[in-house]
Length: 467
Ligand SMILES: [Zn+2]
Image (cartoon, rainbow, N blue to C red):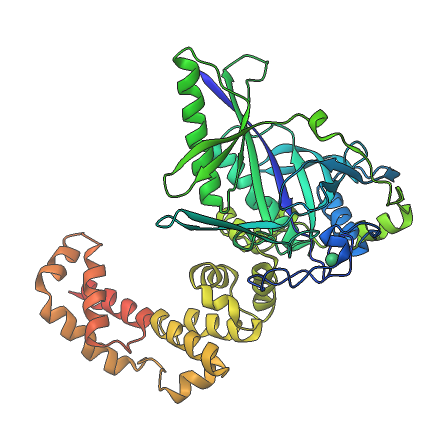
């Protein structure tokens, strides 16, 4: 493997957050809507109708482009991409060809720049549903056009990615970015984010690109990673046995964990692109673009760096906290309410339900645990009850009598009992095996779950070294 270099470029389709479709007034159908309930003359492709550009989609696309440091050309236009498929009643898709809405950007992944070639707008197609009856050899296909005309942003990278890991990290970084700026909900499982990697391999040290294949129908980050790994192995295998890789589009079978050929890849000339005659070219207002640029929130990369600097968070924690704007907002608000930073990060990362409560309650909970008023297990119970009842953590603690045993006299009785019933661990500890303390603490927790662990630990160590 080591004498092959992997080259990956990626097309990511993201559905901008809009109420209506790209060129008509139809609402974007919620997932699992009955088929063909969100359609009109325009998105059904009936003759004699005129499309109208959705401004919210243009705005989301421009914000995405700006967040990716793209240039926004003065002029942009829409084009017809002609092809025939049953889920495309017009016989063409409105997309952007030679004058996209933005060009030449980049995003940083782990300190490495991945160049963005362009971000443009287009419309989605419908969906085919196949129903089969093997027994009677009867098959039927249905078309659902709810998705036809739904806006899509296409984010095209240069072939700068070098491994399945990088490709997955890139797609995840795009998701974080899109959500942070509010341009898309970017949920892969809802089809709002679709990644299509194109993959080739070449001898390490050579410049010329190998023949690439493009992967379709990938609907999770895990599948993206696996499909690329599979494809790299397949291509190197073909080349090492003296064969040649065929340029084609391949699908990913989740069930069989392999890629399979779908169709030979069309070139741009096959689509006979031409300017969409029913839509005017757009002249983008510079002042509006500057307004959009100023409206962008702090971007994930900058926030990550600031979390490390300002709160002394370990970089790995900062990556997780900054991966969702909601987590980072919650973290900063809770710390502002007096909760210690590292402990707050631990709760947000380690306890998914901690992400659901208000910053005030989270701060209260984190402080109750880090001040030793309740232990971590009790903290989890308090969290669950806060979520279900909406009551403040300190109220739950007092109602449930969670206050920990901190009376030093009572604690000493418990600790002495632990010492007398664990002679082996005690002699191990005194012989210098400090890890024996863990076994003693575990027994203490079993004997007295309500004991304040911090105080009990201190007392245990004191009594052990007193001999
Ligand atoms: Zn419509």
